[in-house]
Length: 333
Image 1 (cartoon, rainbow, N blue to C red):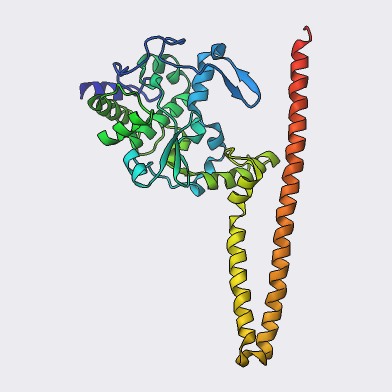
Image 2 (cartoon, rainbow, N blue to C red):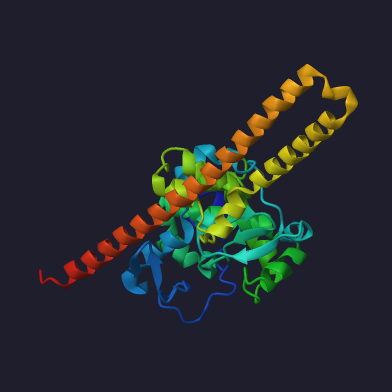
């Protein structure tokens, strides 16, 4: 308890919110010396990122959620402002845990899948918090937010076992160490107002389909590219695209088929054959169904042509931009 009180005496944002001896499973040999295991290579759009470009760049890439922050005021449409369910509940709901290295995809779910970012080992390094994370307020909030999400996910020993098996947490972490670490962390952030964490973590699980809609239609992310691609790139072959976005048409056509069959049976009965109002309604509904089917086919064909033209032009423009960039890099300064 003395450790907790001593840490509370320090202002938020100046001291690491973790135990000083919390380095439970930091790798012995890393390029940064702080337990930061950097990827061999990475791409940001079409630009190759090198591991030696600076530790601060990689920390921002590992922790910050710029895309979700851009649409923060609309996140209530994608998920409730409550903690994410622990891992054992995710399993009980039949969800498959898929690893993502993008913090913007952390705790995003789609159908029976949920994307979770493994907890970086460097978040247990007090020295790195002191020298890098606490020197940048936004970076500190992002780091605290990611740790808070693991306080949600790993609440019981069974959750820790699931996390180890899924590769989310190092297998060397013992339950008692985790218990002490998380409790100390929660004592050193404001769990009521969440003022110490990034705004993204005011929400727990976020539904991908609704994020797609927000990203396509809501400012400031509205653009033709975002309208077509949505929040996360998924299979882009046309069968998968139309299967995701036009399945409702099958239900509509099924309902129309039942309606037309009912009208046909009604007109075949003696009681309705001479019923003028029923015949007028049947005539009107028949015309409306034919128009609806023709309009739906026109929409599908228009979308297919539009996507084909867009992908062709986007590929051509990207090829020109990459070639011009390579050519410019070869011209002596």
